[in-house]
Image 1 (cartoon, rainbow, N blue to C red):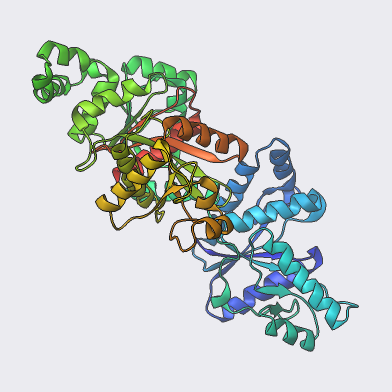
Image 2 (spheres, one colour; image 1 turned 45 degrees about the horizontal axis):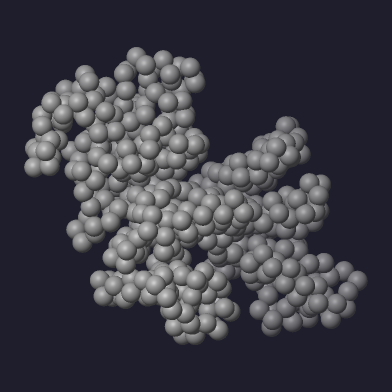
Length: 514
């Protein structure tokens, strides 16, 4: 992403400060672009993302995520061919809190260098420094580190600021070292996380088969995936039925492959392959032919044969029906006997992995080991350095009993099977995520207080927790992702929205990248 400077100054200072900064950075060999995020009216949209009235309506309709996504897209578009984009502020006529929150979201999602203004007029040096320190603390509450301020203060004021580690940018002669333009906040927001996933999927496009090809939600998701150029798609179903369903929801299927299992030239080969793979288990050829008319079996065989890289199903079928063919002939990875389901939990400022939340009701110690190792591999696939917490109602040696002992044993099995992984257990959730609690309960632990992969002792605990966090913390929950299989097959909730389907297809494509 292009470097971004977010100015937070009074409206009168914007032209002089932004243009002066641009000239200064250009003198350092930087290519610089300017962007006004919100124009006041339709006539002022040139060089802006869109007009302020449109932005206010999106906020009023509860579509802040959509607004932020459009703003970040505009920053990236403006920054093409540039080293730095200078973004002017959203002003207080959205209400101070509204403007601040919107600017904060821009800073978070654009990895912006935040440059706030501090007025020095009529103030003593002590009053000015107090205002600077208050400003730094104010932004620090939201995780933003302020390294520079914009101010027309006197030289001795600026010198004292510099001694405190805060550079001063004068609105009249703005100077900022290009090398110091680094993000003021280092967090992973849900929007930033999804953007990174989209970029990764787009960079190495995979082919995903969707067996429920005539379902309106699937078709709408397919249209969005195609529009964003994220994956190649195969829809299963009768071609006339799929096309009619697409017309009914105004979806263009150009560029999307439709395959009818019953009429496919691969049907006989797929049926024979299933028969050969399963005849030792009592499969006969007639039964194999009948099963190959089932779109889930057919789609899974496409993945097995390498025609598709992954499959997403389950919007109208059960988890068992989605997983069954995968277990029968895609099988599990070497060393893994357990298929489990995890959720990528994208919170306001970080991403966690929760497992198992979808498949195993009461895991054995060997299954918990497999869940932990597979979850760590999933974490790595999505750019997360895994620190595994084997969760329990007890931490360390503070408790005993069958449930705690099982988690303790599973933790030791993880350490034996994968000694390179950072794992801690048994451990309570608060000790796993809160540094101050970790310091008290497990001092010196490499995982306590900083865990990001959570293995729950039962499906009951995992499923309840992911839904509680999703709803109470407004977290983006992506999944369940099935892990442990040789090739990616993922299950949808029967209540999955279009956005859920898009997200699951994207992460399936990333799993297929290996």
